[in-house]
Figure (cartoon, rainbow, N blue to C red):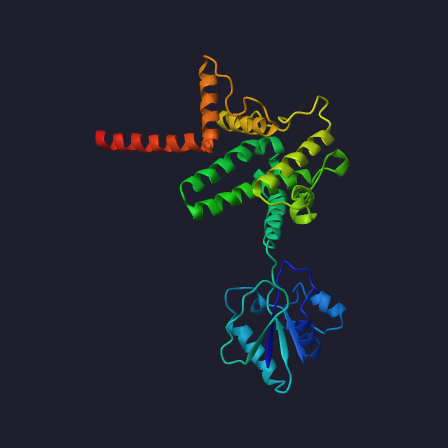
Length: 325
C-alpha cells in the first residue's frame, strides 16, 4: 500500500501528527525528494528516508507520469508493506489512479500561517529587487497614506474582491516598513515584524481586561469606559512633558472632518460642557465644526457622510456629462 504524507511548508520540520510518526516508523520504505524539508528531521529521529532526486518529485498541480510509475514500482516490490511518500511540502492530495492510497496529514497550516509567505517574499524583494532595495521609511510614506484610502474606496463601492486586494496592499506597507526597520540593530531603534506583532498583542490584551483579565462588564458602554481609562493611564505613562489631556494622541494631520469628529468624541467623553455644541463663530470653519457636532448628535460620522455626498455629486456630474454629449 502507498501512504501519501502531506505536510505544510509553514510548519517547522519534525512537528508532525502522532498518526504520521506512527506510519513513518512502521513503513517498509520512506521516499522523498532529496531537498524535502522534512528529510533531515526524519533522519535525525531515526527514520530512513530514500532520497530520490529529479523532476518527478517537484511540486506541481499533478504528479508526473514518471513519479506515478516510480511509486507503483515501489509498492509492487513490497506487496506486504507500506511505502510512505512525502509529497512536496504544501502540495495538495495527488491523483494516483490505479494505486491504493492512504492520505496522511502530517501537519496543517494554522490560521494566519500564510503571513509567513508574505514575510519570505518581502525578504526576497528587499535583497533581489533594485527598486525595493532603495526604499526607506520616508520614500514609502506616500503609500502608507494612499493604500488605506484605496481600501476605503473599495469598501464604499461594495467591491469585496477589490477590498481583499487593497487590504493586501495595506498589509504590504506594514511588512515593508518592518523589513526596513529590521536592518537596524536594536540599539539604533531596529525592530522586526515579530516585534510589531508582540506590541499589538500586548496592547489588545491590555485594552481588553474584560476578555483576558476577568474584569466584569455588562455593556459596550462599560467597555468604552474601561478603554478610555486604560488609554488615559497609557498616555500618562508615556510622559509627554505637559499636563495630561484627553486630547493626547489625537493626530492633527488627519482629514479635517475626521479630526473634528475625534476631538468632539474625546471632549464628550471627558465631560467637556460644550462637547456636542461647540461655540459657533462667524467663520466658515466654525460652521463646519458645528455641522460636525450635529452629525455627532445624530450618531453619524461627518467624514463618511461627506464622502457619500461627494460620491453622489460625482454621479450627478457624470450623468450631466452624458446628457451633454
